[in-house]
Structures are given as structure tokens and as C-alpha cells.
Image (cartoon, rainbow, N blue to C red; front, side, top):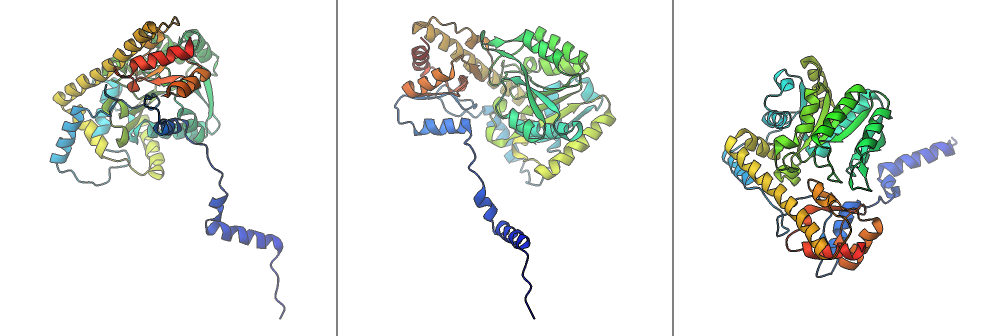
Length: 423
């Protein structure tokens, strides 16, 4: 009996399946580009220079350039340990007490939407996770390819977060490189020019990477324009309390928009303000018109969370809720947050003073005008490369300085280096 030969196309398909099943398909994957920020850190670590400064990473350091754990967090850790808590799964929406306190922290304890049950919320894997859940929510119900507007510039991770979710990422005017400040007129023009009902991301406070925030009066005008255009709003709030040292003040934009009747999405992170970088503590919430709408939206958030990571980690959330529910610990945390903000403001002033002492005649007032962890220095890409090559000062190519890396011990050297490459 003659053997029947498998057709060539079927043979090729069979071979491809076998190759994939044995992992061969992975050998064909291309090398991905390195992460720019972590590549910068790696280059700094490998630099043999005796004098060098790392101004890339967005993590707070004390004046000795060491990681800082807040004393209130240490006390909360003891409370959690003493309570002998178990390690069971949280629900899909996270630790209930954390979610409740997180919403009060953002919207205020007297918030009308909270009292009326009009806020949907889930715990998230820090701000990044909250943004991604929100992005997927937008894409699922607004449709893949829907335009989503980010400020120009914005945090580098915003573009892939919303792009990978299937949205078409666009930009609106925000930063003015000529003044190192806000292009408020250009921003309002773009808000007005966008199609009605467009989706916009707003930085609630301490804009990353520029450190440039609207004034309270400008926030009011932005709210009015966005209401007129019926735009959808997604606030990214990563620095509440850390920006000005006053958590209530830093919540102004979010609370004003809600009071004005906007239905918003809000991503919260507790990395910077509580120093819980590695614990990945955050929340996503949405303010709706009715409690029924809130229940529906929260159900959809959970549907997205379940296949993404099932449920969030509990330890960091327990620390935050322990602090926020204890008046004494919360007051202690507020004082510590103010101290961090004041140190950042102090080194901003020291940097300007030392630039002037070094002989620079370039205007540097924007350094003290800006707020939060980051400063958009105004250095060009060529100047950034020069300060790295000549002085081993490492910052991102857009000239963003993490002010947390500036100390009383290195600010003079930094100022002299900046003057050398900008004179």
C-alpha cells in the first residue's frame, strides 16, 4: 500500500506549529529598546567619576541622598504587625478600608458624591495600574482608536499606557519652552478646538515632568471650558501632599471639578507622598451622576481587574489606611510630608542662588516657580549631553531634573556644571 505524502503547505504549517510548541518562536523575537530612565541610572552607576550626580529617578532622597522611610510609616508597620493580620486574598476591588480612606483623602470627608454613593472605586497597583485600568475602560466603551489627549509634555509612561490600551494618543498644548512655564492660552485654545466630548488627561498637581501647574484661577477657567465642551476628564494624582506640603491644597483641582459637576476618573498613587515606592499602592475612582451608575462602572472596573492581576497586594494598602484612619498618625504624616516638600523647595532656592554665584546671567526663576519633585531646567539636549560627559551629571534628555537628587552637599557642584554648559 503506497504511503500518501503530506502536501507541502501542510508540512510547513506542521513544522511551524512544532517550532512554536517547543519555544522556537521566542528565538525570533527582536531585542527591545532599553528603558531610557533605567538606562540612565545604569550609566550613572557605571560612571567611575569621583564626583557625579544622579538626577533621573523620581524617588525622594534625604539631604544625605539616602532613601527615606517616613516615621509615620514605620509606626503603621508596627500596628499592622501587632494586629497579626493574615495573608488572605483581598477582593477584586482591594482592601475596603483603604479604598474608603483613599476616596476621602482625594475628594474630602465632606464630599457630596461620596455621601450619595456616586463614586465607583477599586484599589490599583499604584498610579500606573490605576491609569491602565482607566485606559482599558475608556477603550472598551468608547472604542479602540478613540483619541485621548495628553499634555505636551507628559509623563513618559502615559503614552504607552493609553496607546497599548488601544486609544489614539494625541497632545494638547501645555508647556511653553520660551518661559519654562504654562502656555495657558495655547492650552485653552486646544481644549476648545478638540471635538466635543473628547478625552483629556490632567495632572492634578506637580505636573510631571515640568513642575508647572495652573493657578487656582486658571483651574477654574479650564473647568469652565471643559464643561462647555463636555470633555471627559481623567485626573492623574501622584503627588497629593508632596507637591505643596498640604494635601488639602493639592486636591484643589480635583475637588473643584467635582463641585462643578464634572464626572471624572481619578488615578491615585501613594508612592511619593507616603514613600511607598515598592509597595505599589494606588486607587482608581470615578465620580458618576447616580449611585446606580457608580455600581455599574465599578462592576466594569472589576471585570477588567480580574483577568489583569486578579486582586491587588494588601500590605501597602494596610499601611496607608492605618495612617489615614488614625488622627494622630495622619497629623504626623502631614508634618513629614511638609518636611519633604520644604526640602525640595529649599534646594530649588539654593540651586538658583548658586547659579547666580557661579556667574550665570541666564534667567533661572522658573526653578523656584515650578513645584513638586521635578524641575524642567530649560537645558537643551546638547547641554544635557555636555553636562553628562563633562561633569557626570545625569538627567533625562529633555532637561528634567529630579530635585530629590539635589542636596546641600552637591548643589554648588551642580550649579557650576549647569553654568559651564549654558554660558
